[in-house]
Amino acid sequence: MMWGFLLPKGPDAADLDALLERFQAVVSSALDAVGLGEVAFEGSSDLRWHGRKLGALTAQDVVACISVGGFLNLRRPDLSTYLRVVRIPDDKFKDKAVKDMTEYVCTAEEVAGTTVTYEDVRDALVAALAADGIELRPDRLGPGEAKGFAKLSERVRSPGSIRRISSERFTAAAPPGCAVGFGNHKGRKLCRAGVALDGDGVIAAAMFAGDMHASPPDVLEQLSAAVQGAGGTDTDDLRARISGVWESGEVVQADDNMGVTTDDLLSATARAVDAARQA
Image (cartoon, rainbow, N blue to C red):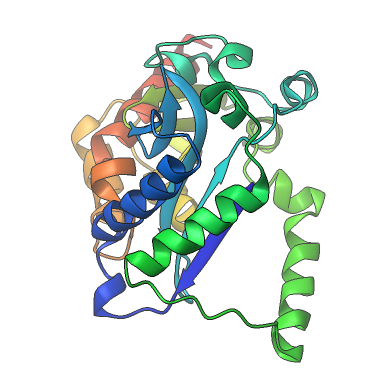
């Protein structure tokens, strides 16, 4: 089950951390009403039960509005297919109590000891929102919105969008004569960096990726452009270039729960440089 709420921008929606805290209370109330009271928010807004993941809640500035959304595993996902398609870095699970992906994921039925339906959770969530004074305004998409949604859907599901940030694509496009390396760093969220070093140890090209929610949509491309031309081992310069983007005041993320820091990005970059130098 997935849900999402689009909040108009304004003073009440400016603090993503405060929004998350408010909606976490709403979701917790709804879960308690359907027999999932043992589930708790942990880490980066994950919903966990005895160290296992049942769902999550996120808040993100999506330019036109603020999005608060989440999901809940009502039934067991097809993890065998998922794990054939998705590459999960080893660092992803280093801070998890349960290390195996197939064991890490749990379902509402396992927690409650009985079937929990979509209607159960939906009605409980709507009731919890009303109790908190959050007004829902259900409406159909207008003609212009429907056209825009269809256009966006087509673009997002295209191969170019799905693999827009790709380690393989980055490696293939690296400037001739450059050594390529990648590095991961797990802080509150997982960060990944890739660099192409020229013969003088200068970063000729870079890429950033990760398990994070940050806005604007092109912020990772901004980071990649910012570190190009820096000496791979010049930590002070790299920190200044990364912070110039990440701490510019233009980047919006939920810092307390999901925040990625300049130091996180710098650590991933340093590991990528080390890997490239060894290569």
